[in-house]
Amino acid sequence: MASIPPDDEAAAAAATENGHGNGNGNGPPPAKRARSVITAAQIRAEFEHHEAGVARVNNGSFGCCPAAVLDAQARWQRLFIAQPDDFYFHALQPGLRRSRAAVAGLVNAGDVAEVSLVDNATTAAAIVLQHAAWSFAEGRFSRGDAVLMLHYAYGAVKKSIHAYVARAGATVVEVPLPFPVASADAIIAEFRAALAVAKAGGRKVRLAVIDHITSMPSVVIPVKELVAICREEGVDKVFIDAAHSIGQVPVDVRDIGADFYTSNLHKWFFCPPAVAFLHTRKDDPIASQLHHPVVSHEYGNGLPMESGWIGTRDYSAQLVVPESIDFVNRFEGGIEGIRSRNHEKVIEMGRMLAEAWGTFLGTPPELCGSMVMVGLPGCLGVECDDDALRVRTMLRKDFMVEVPIYYNSRVVEGQEMAKDKNGDAVTGYVRISHQVYNVREDYEKLRDAVNKLVAEGFTSSKLRPSEKQETMA
Image (tube, rainbow, N blue to C red; front, side, top):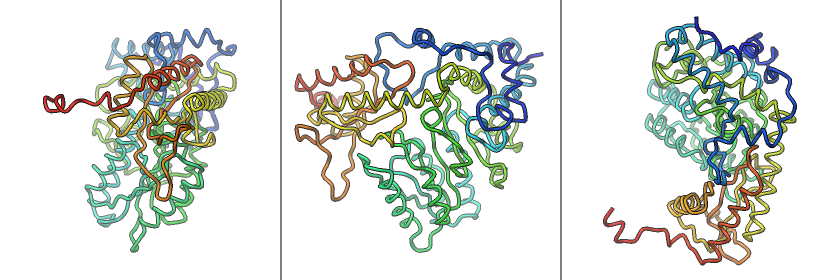
């Protein structure tokens, strides 16, 4: 009979005790064995599968996975391949419960039953938005009722909002957040103003979709305060899209108080792609009404079970959450220590780049986690999203630097566009990440690449296709 891989049995026992990671729901399960603090050489060995020579300062997009966790994943994959029937009927659900229990402990969930494992935060958003769309279609919501989202909501989630709830009859209202951002108070003020628009004329606000950390530009949003405002103002449900949160900022779902909370575990918590969780309070009647978009064998048996059986697929990424916890426990201070050091380093590197380029950070340090926005010299002339993508591609191909670039198209009313030391408007920003594998040389490589472009008189317009090329295309 298939069983949890032998190396994982002790962790499984710890994870399933009382349905929580450490038996009380207040933290991750203990490491499988006592280990000394990981060394720099051991960190390099864990990530030696990264392509050599690439300055990878973009952990935010796809995350990273250490060799120890990849090895655990391979054990699960071999177990499945060896005897698939036995795996599906005897090993899969205990293994998934073990991971769900570990997540419940990480985020202070009330019960393991409140945690469902899904592929990514986009899937979690589809689950919540699909239910909202049904509520419009079945008459529980009135056409014209509002759904509120941030202007900087993740692109796929924005499109999901329009594909599900706007199509079903919702009025979508955006919160027009400023960038660069000066303070959390500025975000709160814009949110209150947009909520007033959403409620105008007695309209009901059925759902607020709020990012915990926006993707582009990257800003840590004061979610607890915004959830409290939603409660005061009678918003029906609040969904926190926290794709980047686990591993970047502290997460306590009970303290935050949202109805739905999702985060990826493959971005900042060292899991392989793709695994995320969706938290829903078990005492909320809506929990029994949520369904996975892929209808399969377990439909109607609750979202945790539906999500854990969606046909033949590779579930191994969802089965190694305890091994990722074991990995972070090798670091001084565990995940809290990693978060703190990543934050300090990314701010230090961001300031180094800003000084070298004569620019500034896009947000104050208190609104940053392990990512920060840094203005590019205005002379680079980033004038559209396509410019930003072409410059990003050039940095990858010509300089072996991997970093996202954001084009800031929004001019805040009554404010001039922020300018660099030479008086040029700053329209392009890099979003740099810091993770345990990064070293100072990664950021110096980015610094020198941009300085070289500036010295050579480069502008983004040089990468644009000619009219002749566009006609041929």
